[in-house]
Length: 345
Image 1 (cartoon, rainbow, N blue to C red):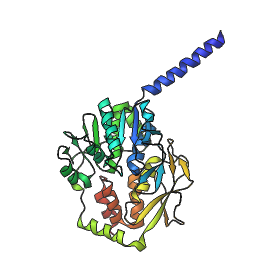
Image 2: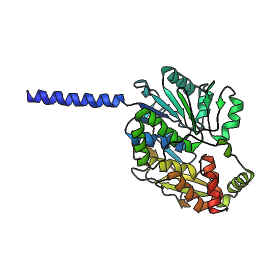
Image 3: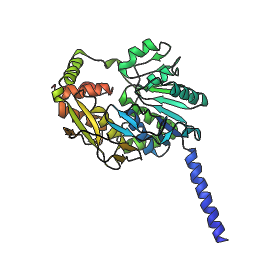
Image 4: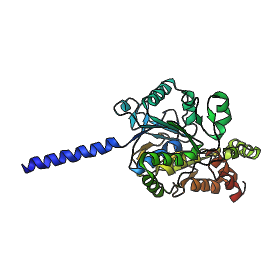
């Protein structure tokens, strides 16, 4: 009899744990093996996984490695789209993808929306949603550099530039790369509550979400274009930058580093370390099979204030104008102050 009582208690506990897991929302971060922007994928994943309040998976058409752009690193998806048939996601996050208008992916997204899923794009992930027809008749936002083009290509969408993220019905879109973090915190607030969101933000040293934004302030000035062109054309100054990985690495810091150091127009960032490394929250990241024979520079993963500290590293390496150019691409609220803080070079 005692054995039966123990067995029943164990079964009840297992069922309770399974029920709790099933009750958590499932968030699928959609990736494309041909190229997925590193920060757009890594930051939402880290925030949601750190919360412990939702289940989050990186998913792709297959389980093959996904290239993290614009640098050189690959991530292993945790599920394929076919796997999601067993447990459809409650929320789908769409980062900026190298291939925006894949017909099969567009059909899948339309089916998920019709089923009742919520969809959030990060940065130019809005281009994928627009190509699938999901934004017609809605308000939306996108990376500042894409906004004029998107107004012409998708006139049925009401494009806004005064918010870091815009929610219209079941769809949320964000401005440039740096808006992914606050928008994901806002999503977490809605999925798990204020206390969970605040505790998660504190543990990750992230500011609380604020949707206010002056999108009109972001533009390519003549000076920025001149500096970017010099960086690109001065090939003798180009560098290969190692972004070192160790077991349990911070996903936000890694995504930001591999992204930012590849946006200077004078350096390319490469994941370095073991052939495969597992992150703090269980993502497997691969380095290139044939990395450079030597690296010109190492870029340690910064904490806290990841973005600002990464921009500061770039500023120390290449000067204020280059750091400002990188922050402009990230659509970071503090981009205007970076060049002035360190002068030009």
